[in-house]
Image 1: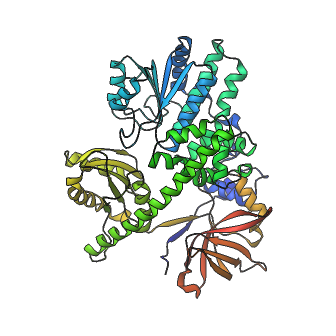
Image 2 (image 1 turned 60 degrees about the vertical axis):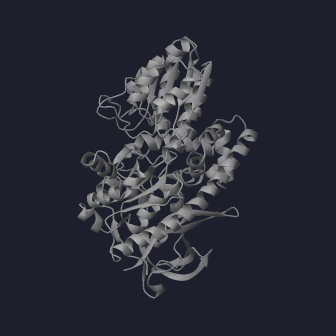
Length: 577
């Protein structure tokens, strides 16, 4: 029997609903009110984005770059190996070239050789290309030693990043980061590609003011990068605050209008997605995994070249290679998850089937580019924080990815372990729900004991039931294509702005199993005469064997099949009340 979860309905004050425009569907007004969205945040046109001139770091960085343009300097963009870093790299490089910078190249650190960020080793590698200026994207705010090494070698550095800074900042020529302590810009949730976009937009204005480009170019070049901004923002799971929703919405409109760059069009094609109806879920679940596969298994340069391809003919084989890599990643992940399940069962046996406070797993055959995905899946399955380790290319060293549950800040947990036992963790970093770390393989058992001890202090978080937040029930008349399309049009939904989920006790008219993994159902509202189609992905059985009333938590979606559009329920959870 499937485990019951706590289903809670969001509060949607009637007063807040009444303040929203009457043109908004009543159910959508309820959804907006539950997310504290007022009438001033319904309009997602690009003119509502936070003004570029308010981002002091971007304005200052643009001035530095304009000086570099005047001197015809060689520029090297140092990126990151995830989708946010890839889109930020592609945006920065292509924009600088379009602005007339004469020599712009990029470099993405090999995650297996150099790890993350502007390390001294990657700076020395970069120096072989003899750049005058290094621009980091989606990294660098913690790279003090790397910046120092760059300056020693005669290179200037502009950092663009969105991660939180440490106690001391690198001695860069300029740092463009909305989360610096002295930065008053309100867009604190920008992804790395969003920060790069603001820098490019500010640079366009500065170059136009100095007479290097015309006003049309100053506007059209940043606008052309909005498809990348949408992809990187959704992929990086940053909160979709109002400014990010404006940016993502603008990028999706470009994609739907056929204005996406060839690489993104090619990725939509291999993913079997329709760009004319693009939405944030297509970016997050269709495009981003294929892009990330390159960074996980080989070299993200493949993904960046796809994103920067000048023609569809050039982009197609690159997208096909990314698709193949993603299939390899999925097969590798499935094998590792199966092996991790055995490790998890062994760990549970060791404590007589009582759940441990946390799990720390390692297998010598695991791939370090995939352990984060495995840790995430096991965290969901066990409802416990999980660290999964793989061997590094450095002999005797393990690299791990940690994933946590609500109420346990995993980066802070690792920090406490590092403070208490300074010789245990070689390096670490991350945030509340995810972190990365390295340690010597000989110290794994010691770390496991320390990790479980620290997590064991969070009794409340560990005993708290999983919660599914619902936007309430729907009336029979609302189970319609009209509302499904209204909810789709109200996107982008995503991190911090969740897509609406509704809950009802529905009658099961019929069901069948698809591919031994998914349930295809026909459901009927108690007060309705007609049934509606539903699909429950990766849920092969009904709770209670289908003998009791079932409560469904579902999304109302549009199913397009053979040019016919119909409303469909996508079941997120089902349980017996």
